[in-house]
Image (cartoon, rainbow, N blue to C red; front, side, top):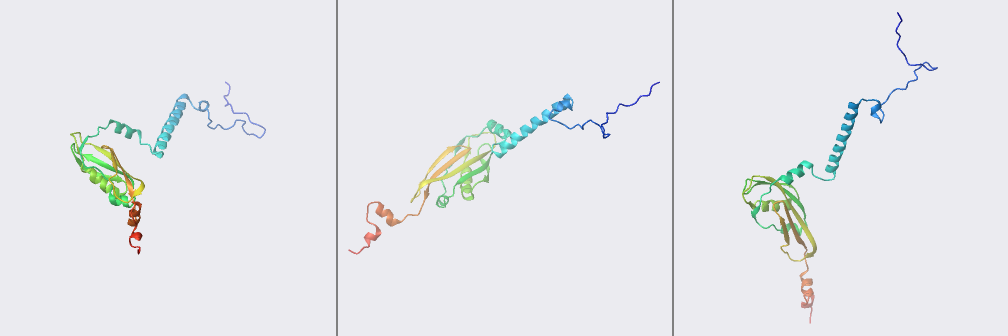
Length: 203
């Protein structure tokens, strides 16, 4: 009966094996089976999806779930409420910006309005305006209302009401002229009359 001996790789002159160690390469089919290849491709696909989501977040894009919820959400119809104005003190201080308020309704009126972001002086007046809203009967819901306050030039010496654009209940945009302190003497002269210096100049 013959003796079975294992086959060993041939040795080179230095007494070491001529076979090189096997490392994973860019061609997984030479190392792994078909099932492993499918798992690798699946992992790469998931990594691409994750990278796309991270890019959307960094670019300020809302998540897909948020977009779907907003598209399917039924917003209530505003049937009454006060007209929003630009706060006089905020105009004098040239404070402008965007205010976001989370609104909760009970099916007819606002039950709570919480400021999420925005300049405090503007947020106070935006919240007060939201609390005056009344709706047609609807299923109780929650949404975020955005108030955008903008000051445009040129400045003027007197206050005016400005303009308000309403896309209720989600968007309110209020634009007003800037206000500056004017010299009464200059105002009189620009109107065609004598200035204060002319009135008190000796004849």
